[in-house]
Length: 110
Length: 112
Image (tube, rainbow over all chains, first blue to last red; front, side):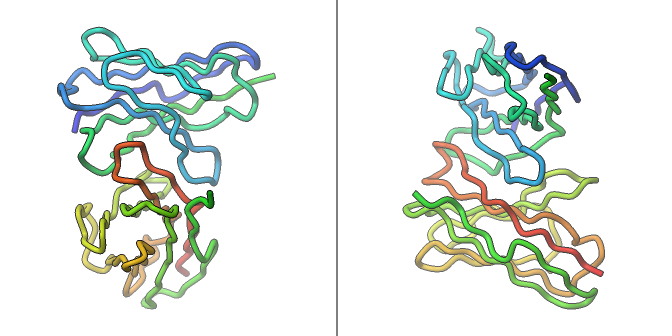
């Protein structure tokens, strides 16, 4: 499975958009980009996933570059409840377990 | 729709004992995975079961085992507990990986 690189931590002002980057330069053609987040002491929560097109759901938007070597998760209007560790994971569609890296600790500040 | 249910939520065991943790997946989900989370190692994959068969296994010693029942409920067992087994154990279920995994709240195991 492709490895991912994320910044260790980021801050965002409440109400502003939070843009979380992820590099996955060794991604293969059949591998999807998944995003999960983990709020303190809870299990990880699925946010969104995509293959090559940009995706949007009620929680977030996922922007994948044309060469698929990087992506950005966008929380359009961050709230204090979005403070969490965000994990970017790359896996084959019908494949393996989730391999979690260190993730990005997002702190949303008032 | 009920979420993934893990029991118990908290557990304290003594070194050398064994422990069994339980996971009830979302109705209709046949894939159940287990993860261990510690401050030092982060989230690590233990194993995955699908239709009562272990489909994938992480890099953990044989003291860690699991099984899945015909109703998709799963249990994991850790024998001869060590202090280093203290962790949050998370269970996740999926229809079959494609639509993402849903995690439970975990069982926090403390070994003393």
